[in-house]
Length: 123
Image (tube, rainbow, N blue to C red; front, side):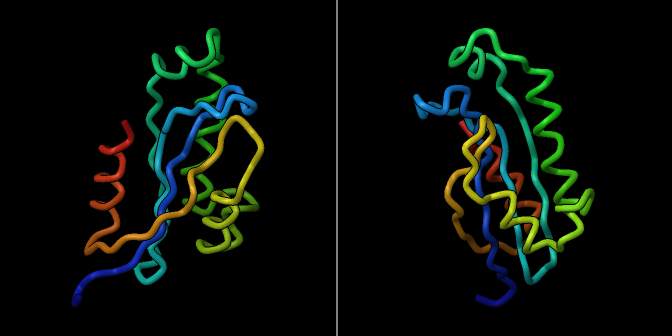
């Protein structure tokens, strides 16, 4: 299809208790190689996180999640690796409170619009 670009994305998850496997989606990372686009958006539904893990340090969680868009923007040693390498590092499996879903693919005309659409589907 003319004018369409492939992209890869993963949902960012908070997994308060790794052994239980319960999670809350809190953001999306999107990478479009052909348009040289890598970005992430974060939004924490504090009520959902608190329901899984009362009490939970939301301020510390936000601090850690804020690193993801900064890496996408090229900050820090991981961000300086390049977009593809940064994306693959961000979405690689981690046994931590912050994890990502499996990587999925899609087609779009504008990755900014695609990222905004994916954020609306976080639920």
